[in-house]
Each structure stands twice: as structure tokens, then as C-alpha cells.
Amino acid sequence: MASSALAKLAHDSSEKLPPYDKLPPVPVDGFCADSTRACDPVRLEMLQQWPKAWAGDYQSQRNVAYMQSERMAGVPYNPVQGCAWRMVILASGHTQSDSTDIANYNFECRALTPVELVTAKASAGQIFKTIAGNTLPDLPPPS
Image (cartoon, rainbow, N blue to C red; front, top):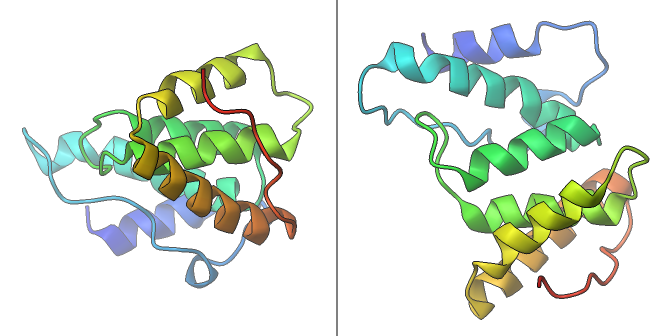
């Protein structure tokens, strides 16, 4: 399925979402070990979750963080961005947030090198500023 067709499928919704042209590019790629068909469900999931995450949706932010932190065909592995989204989740103060969000932050972010952690924090700051309009608050170091 072509990327533009996936994007249209993902964005056909009655929800109020940011327009795709106002968001950073959706992190999907063409690599798939078996076939493109095997990648399409993962790509479609990322295409659906991406604008919702940028709109501040808690579960979508968790899903984007997970998809970037795991090795999934169709979504580039990017643990630095996964950690950045975990920081955004904690800083956002979602009412649904619980101890698993702290555990995910600790697990994913403590695996990064010091340089990667600084990069993740800078990225989280940009994401948080875009979503919340504020500066990312200080978070405790991952433990």
C-alpha cells in the first residue's frame, strides 16, 4: 500500500487532529524482512497514532514511544525518540498516567548513553513546546 494511501486511511477520522502538513514527518520506513504487506499494519498504526500524539492524546503518545523504542518492521528503531516521548508523557501530567509510565521512562531512557540522553531531552523539549506551549519541566534522571 502506498504511503500516501496509508496516510489518507490513517487520517480519515472525525477527530480534531493537527493537519499532516503541520507535523514532523511520520517515522515510517519501507524496510520489511518478509513483505510490504507485513509492514502495512504497523505503518498504518503509526500513521494513525502520530497526529493524535502531537495533539496531546495520552495513549497515542504511549503508542508512539513504544513503536519507536521497539524493533518493529515498518517503523524505524529510534530509542532516543522513544525516550523523548516518555519524557513528554511524564511532563504532561496526564490524569491517566501511572507507575508504568515511570517504569517505561526509567527502562527506556537509562539504556541510552549520556549523549543520547541529552539528545532525547532536547527533542522532548521541542515536542513538549509544540504540544503544550511550555518549557519541558525538569525530570529526575532515569534510574
